[in-house]
Structures are given as C-alpha cells and as structure tokens.
Amino acid sequence: MSSPIANHRIGAISALSGVPVSTLRVWEVRHGAFTPGKSEGRHRLYSDEDALRASLIRQLTECGHSISTLAKLSATQLNALLQQQRSAGQRSRTAAPSQAPVTVAVVGVGMAARVASGQLALALPDKPIQITEILEDLDEAAQAPMPSRPQVLLVRVNSLHVLAGNDIQRLVHAHPFQQAIVLYNFGQEPVIAGLKLAGIKVRREPISNAELGELINSLLWLDHNPEASDVQRSGLVPPRKYSDETLHRVANSPNKVLCECPRHVAELISQLASFEQYSQECLNKSAEDAHLHAYLSSVSGSARALFEKALEMVAQHENITLPQMPSWGAQAS
Picture 1 (cartoon, rainbow, N blue to C red):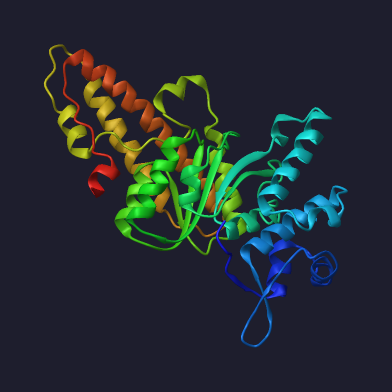
Picture 2: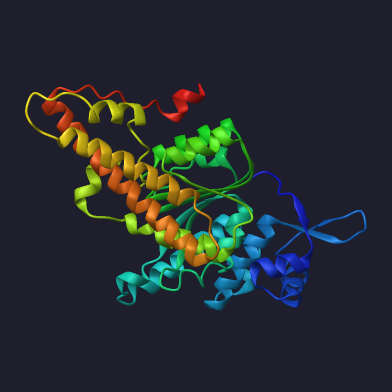
C-alpha cells in the first residue's frame, strides 16, 4: 500500500475501531503499534489504516492473542490471522447454516475499518461479516487474485467517474461475486446509471451502518437455486438485455401460428424492468424500507432475467430477431 494519509485524531480512531483511547495510547507507546503523524498544531494524526489495524488488533486480542505479537503486523497480516482464527473456530463446531459468515472483499481502507469494527453487526445478527480481502483502491483490486472467492464486493470511492466505473465493471466480471455494492461521495449520473444497469447496487454516502447491513442482508438471497444459474454469469442480477423498443416490437410482431407467447413474455419483461427500476429509486424512510426495496429490486431483476431467457427461446422458435442493448462500457466508449 502507498503511504496512508493521516487525518484522524485519536478520538476518531477510538470511535471507528471500538478501542478506548487509553488502550490505543498504551498500544502506541509501549508496543509501537502506531506511528502517527503530526498536525501543524502538534496533534497526533492517524490514518484509515490505523483505524483498520486497531479494529483487527482488538478482535485478535479478544481471541487471546498478545498485543506484543500483533503490534508490528500489517493490516493484511492481521486480517489473515483473524480469518485463520475464525476458520479454526468454525471447524471446531458444527455451525448452523444461518451462522455462516458473509465473505466480503473491501476496496477502500476506511471502509474496511468501518466493517472490521463490527458496526454492521446489528444489521446482520445472523450473518457475521468476514473480510477476505482488504484492497486500498481499484488499481490494487484489479491485480488481486481473490482466491477465497468472496460473496460480496464492497467498493468505497470518493469520486465515481467514467474510469472508476469501467474499473468496477471489469472487477465484477473478473470474479464470481454474488453481489457488488458501490458507495460514493460524488458521481456522474451516466456512470451511476451504467453501474445500476449492470446489476451493481450504487448508494451515495452518507449511508448508515444499519442501511448498509440491511442492503447486504437483502441482496444475499441471490445465493439461489440451480434453475437460475444459467441466467447469470455471476451471482449479480444481470443488466437488461432488451430495450423497451425491442420489447414493443416483439409484442406486436405477427406470428406464424396463433400463439400469444411473444407478446405476453415481452410485456412481462417490460413490467418487471419498470418495477425493478421503481424499487431502486423508491425513497427509503427507514432501514426496513431500504431492506424491502433492495429485496424487491433483486427479486424483480432476477425474474426479469429469467424471462429474458424465456424470450430468447420463444424468439428462436418464432424466428424473431432480438437485438440486445449495448453494454454500458460500449456506450461509454
């Protein structure tokens, strides 16, 4: 990783990591766990990576590891040790399926610190989160092999521009994620729309821990049955294949036999696509609203993809041409 930017006071690190300020000072002074920078006013300043390491060290010390053995380890080494600890614990007992952890690859050290702190635990009481990869940025993520095959990709960027959008789409297509979530501060509308069309969930910060946890929880229903597996290249809800114009043409095309299937299937796809978009854009007044709308969007998107597969079968039978919508990457170029 490149040199981290130090911009947090120790109180912020304590809030992010769940470690008391007094403990952080002991870890720093006695064990050299942190090397903070200094502000112009001579205040100690800590980085996002310091917050992440503090969260990981806290969890490992709670498991019985000594701070003296952890203090000099990097965030990547600490996370690997924590995953080994959890894997050993899972092997020693028969865990119920509902207790299996949600595996997450996190792009953005600050977001990794937020996840590692356990702040999402209340929204996922039956699904502990296991960070399998901690990646500083999209460039590092593009080179990461991710052998653990994490279920969820969680990306945190400040600016969601065209290049970032392209990088995210390439990353999604390179790995079998079940879901991908992108959080951003500033973004270009065409990029945001393109990612949504690609089945990626996009949310603007600030997003509460409860809403983020509920979003992850509601999306993971797509660890779904074999009947849907041939519809998706990965676990993501696939983007739309056919435009409203194509669906309208199919619905009104003459048939060689008295069969209304092309019209009915095309109309169903159009309705499902409209409801999918409506669910994504519906206002959320609470975490429960966000959970429901994310679930409805995923259900309607998956059903729409299944009916698109059915439409292809009907079109082949009826000799109907189905021009697909261009991908967002092709549109951007």
